[in-house]
Length: 438
Image (cartoon, rainbow, N blue to C red; front, side, top):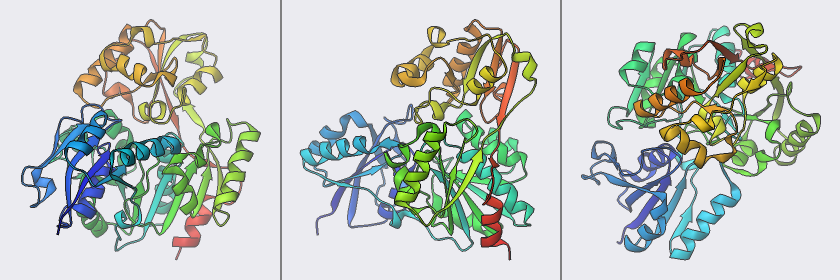
């Protein structure tokens, strides 16, 4: 019987997971190639034979997505699997049309990729990148630990280095971050959990990760990435929305799917959003998922010394993915600069070097803030250089980690932090007590 020849479109995350769970040892399919986008320096590599399994002794090549049509034609592809996140619905259908026109089928995958754990799973996902998943996950972790539960966090994949070395990672200390040569993006997600004494797992093979993590957890906490669906079947699915981008909850893939399957929907940032936008989000939640519990929340900001910002010309460094994939033009750092009286927010774009300049070209909506891009040593060095050549009095660091531990900044700094704070009732505490309070 002829095998179905498959190409998987991805960004070094769900694409690898879909392959591992559904295709790796399946003799009915032959995965001919991956294509890659969104993440720098992924294309041109190979999904290694050590991870690809016995059916792929040479591994599987990874090509740039720009070669999609050529690959379908020349490699006689039968089926294309779309496997990355935080893109408009229209974008997905443009890709589907492109694939169908060349003669292949187009496929999205969900249920069959969700692995079943032996312990309860609480998942925290979102409708867009930058909605506030990270602080929501931290809040859920704090509540569960206060309830006396042993919590282990499993983070959505960010395997940007040596895939064989990253197949299975367990983080219990900052030394583990150095051991695995973690990027800025990885550190931003792992460090806040480690600061709380919570173990974090991540990597490439999420079934192997699951079987190890569930051995030391009473509750697994899935910490989502972008607006992707969870890799593990959730017992409680929490989804974060962002009224700063009201309406996006119904216009992005797979964020709308997350919203429709949510048990709990958090409307975040209500302290800084306009009332009409919050009402738009509430209306859309009710329209597609009236059974969901809705929790109102804010993400208040904390600054080392607010008075130090007043009257200064500041460079604002924000969380990278929030500005790029999330399409935001500002974040907590800009809010802090305006609230505490900065004289000017300095535009770093004329001073950007190397891949940082390329990031602005790829994501022109970013505006006059600096995304903390750091997918490798070279990019981290270019980020540092961009910071230090931008003329300003002060650097406002609004990344989830203390960026000053990773790059050397030659000007005074103020760090901005943010946590989730529920407003009114019900709260996440109420929800978690009802579900796990026994």
